[in-house]
Image 1 (cartoon, rainbow, N blue to C red):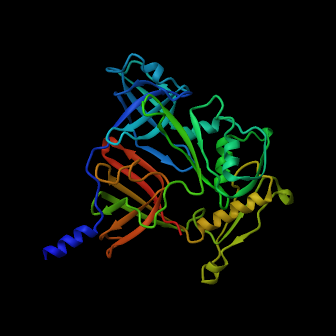
Image 2: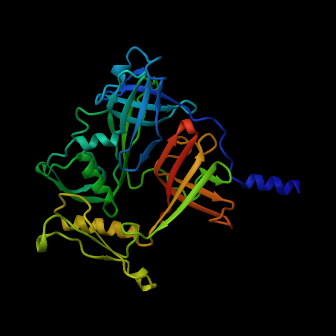
Image 3: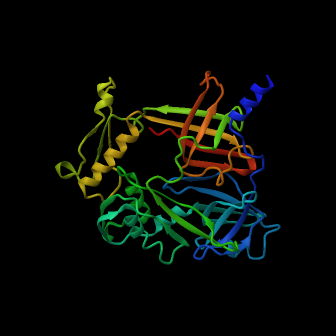
Length: 377
């Protein structure tokens, strides 16, 4: 009996050591990434979050009672970057540009900040005509403006091996954010995100690596990071949807214009699914403004069909951050993780799946981490 128990314990995934998630906050110069002040009195008033290829935002309160002398310079709107570092792992987990600051007779100042993807929506692409260039080279070219007189971005964009054509005119008024999001949304498009790292071993400032990959993160068939229920997971929801915009057997991407002059992709049809008995569901959409190439519309329609054919399958997992695999060390944005359910009303016989972290929320004060995990076919 003892041998059986020992074998069972060896077979189960080993959980991480329990340490509360505490973040040390720094106010930094947005142009250089250099630390201006430690901000021990800074606290997020809601969860921190990140998403692949998108900006997220949150608000903070700064207690002025014990604030350092340079707190104003360290939180200037439009000029500073707030960075939270996990005190246990010494890994930066979140960074955001300060965009709003409110204060008065209260003992606290409220700050609004957005992750550094948001800055890309304040810079424009200028004219770029890129013919048969690697996807990573195209995104690097579109980053020309933000890399000049912008935050401390550093490109981490090795070739993906996929050549594409991409054209945008300065008169199109396309922001860098909208352009790189459009490329990611195409069939076979690369993924991108902006991380935050220490600039050097001296730990006096930070850099912002702009990662471009075929797929961000590590996609392992048997990932080591395990969210188990019961265990570190306190609750979970498995959502399956074939609602409009989430499921379709036919997709059509439409461009700008009216009537017969309006650009359109060809209809992309999941013939195998329909042959298996599914009724036809049609999804027409406009992926982005300024698309003038039917081939780009075809690429968007193909990507949409691949994502929507069998509908969306999303796990929303809420776990104790001190007991769960450690964000930033054991898993991160784009990584696959394992979900192991021993038994629940939804899964009475248990379930074990591998799903990918497309976004996450972290609330250190509540000891809660909430990955949004997508099953990918």
